[in-house]
Length: 262
Ligand SMILES: [Fe+2]
Ligand SMILES: [Fe+2]
Image (cartoon, rainbow, N blue to C red):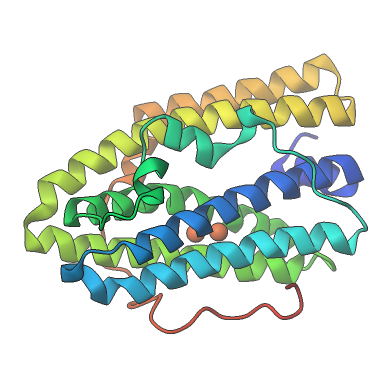
């Protein structure tokens, strides 16, 4: 039976696929950490109250990167290079989503518009992160090696998503509503394409490592295309809505440590 659980179990049980999975995840998380740290450093004066939350956001993503590296180390595995076609964060940036790295590397303060763009980009990508971690939590919360990590990261991603909703609503009330809706739509449409392409690329690598028969790979690819068709038709809407979250000020306060991992 081909289910999300059996698929993940297969990937997690094999050292080579496990370390590719963790390497891809660690690299995406640390890129996110770097981006947020740069944004926090360049926050414009008028938005400086937001800076500690952006710093916390970045610190959480860095922590996630360290956790995925620690999971590999625990099994005596070294990270492997991330194939560019599986690099979700880099592909989003190349598609003009979020803030360009050139801008983040420069030492010019960002504008309010940039901060709105960062939050809208994060609202879309954190939705993805939150759903993916929720799926892992559903199946592996009790896993002896991964359970704690999965639960912690999942909780953090839910916080990130709540924070994006809350802050974007604040900016919408301050008159940025039309811009926010436009950026969210552009971002969601680009993200679902990048997500499809990355999913196909990751599955192709996993299929080679695990020696999947052609028929199995074909079923998986068809599933990924079906998800994309659904997201393009209707699913994208869940990524652009804004609703005041139950968790308020989810990123107030310092990042929670993960001493058992890093
Ligand atoms: Fe993360
Ligand atoms: Fe996140």
